[in-house]
Image 1 (cartoon, rainbow, N blue to C red):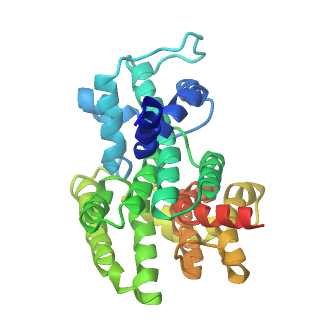
Image 2 (image 1 turned 180 degrees about the vertical axis):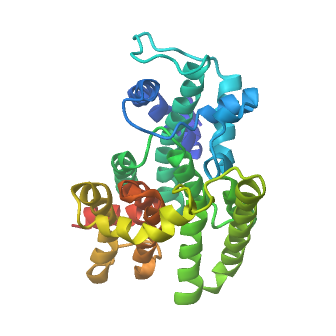
Amino acid sequence: MNSNNKIISFIKSNFGIFLFTIFFVILFRDFLYTYKIQLEKFLPYYAYQDQIMYYLTGDDKFDIDAPMNLRFLGLWTQYLIFKIIPCIELSTKISIAMPYENYTCTTFSSALMNYICLCGILSVTFSYCYKKLNLNISESILTVLLSYIYIDHVEAFTLDRISILYFLIILYFLDNKKISIILIILSAIVNEKIIFILGGLFFIRLFLNQKKEYFHFFITTLISSILAGVIFFIYSIILKNGYYQSDLDGLGLYDTFFTEGIDRIYAIFTSKSGLSNGLVPLIFAIIPYIIAIKINSSKFYFSKLDFLIPISLLIFTAGGGMEQTGRYVMYSMPLWLPIFSQQILFF
């Protein structure tokens, strides 16, 4: 085997890593863009990087309340980047005063983590489509391009990207029961939306599609949800460090979910903000399943009942607000984008 063939063979066997490296190099403007926006707070976002300061100082004023401070994977990853990777400051002048001494470097850690996750999502998406779903090169590449487009519906400054990446990795390893079970259980320290989506997916497969091989995955998801609930209970109820408060103060879970939840979902269909931030992304998510009613060009199994998964994510709209609906719905895109890519190329 000559040197060229060796290089080609190496790239094929490590194509995911090769793609990640390519994306990391060519998309660097995305990192600079999000880094500056975060520093200047040009767009409102939840400052997860403050938790790094809590880990460093133990000062409660930096601690973000549960459930946000329970998304340990993203928070620990930010902290690890902060400790290991040298902080790079932008050459341009920042227009706002720094709220605390390490604000620039904690924000750098957050921006870098999200950039790494973006490149990870794109590379794992290709590997998942090509190796696991048996899509061809064109279909796999189109899925990657669509992922890059639709990722704009989730926040680039918080923990959305790392959560979607983790969900993708679970899907990638579903054919390995031991690894997937471990990953599903650990979802309890990543993001509750992953557990919710997996619960819906495995419920449909096990009970509605009668696929008994999903029994272990469904039970494991239940265990993960219980673990997440126990962790939340300890932080928010016992330690009183969360949003589960009295309904008398106007800030508790009761007020934000049970009393205003239906109105928030209804507003998706009645307001301009709701239409653009909620209804349009929801339509994007269910279109592949609508098309599949008449045309099934998929090379892998999926259930036409899977459209219930993005719709069910409206339950988070009841708690988080209609403006966040697009974010919630796009968590499910690893399920339906491969379907949509095949349909586009079919037409």
